Image (cartoon, rainbow over all chains, first blue to last red; front, side, top):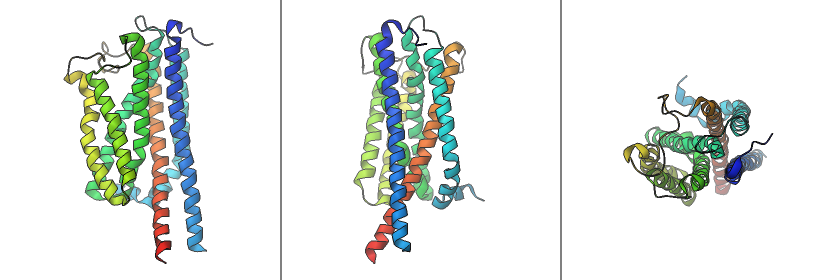
Length: 50
Length: 242
């Protein structure tokens, strides 16, 4: 299943690992910040209304 | 209804909420398809060997690094001309995504460069203008973080964005301007002779669609976060005055 990457296996593997890690990091970070701000806004709205 | 009404924060939150899961879903499908197709089901290049598989990451990321800055420029100009708060927040939201794309392009380029050029880095026109673009992204984000007043921050970062656009364009056309350096010409071209072979082109196209959709989805998500953050700040200021 894994293609034979020959003598460049380390370079190709590293390029994919670094890129996927960075993509996952930006998605995860954006998601976490979104959840955090939503909770902060809900709390602020509740204080304003209550 | 005018197009500008969609930029009203309340309307923006209304129309972006339902499309966000679809945008992330479409981005995921295209990214996974493009990368699996490219990694597992395309042959090695006769000169580059298996390093050609890095193209499916490097080219889409480089494309998005430049286009993210162009999107920030358009949003900044809209802010400066029409004072639409959502456009300033969209520019701010795009910067961390753009810098991630720039970093991917720089790192995958360096990893590919070592076996192909014999060096991770060269002060080549395209590589250098890309490094400067990366520094502009850093400066842009630092400026937003350094200024407390959001409108002043939006004004100053918009001006910085206009200056940085020179390097965004240079990083795209540097190869054409200066016919020197290590970096080859564009991988994608309307000229059949110049364009990459079909066997690499189609999975590359799917990967590019994945990167574009991911950028779109992330900018929507992050702009919504910025709008909420602005609202929290306004409520806290109101509470403080009581």
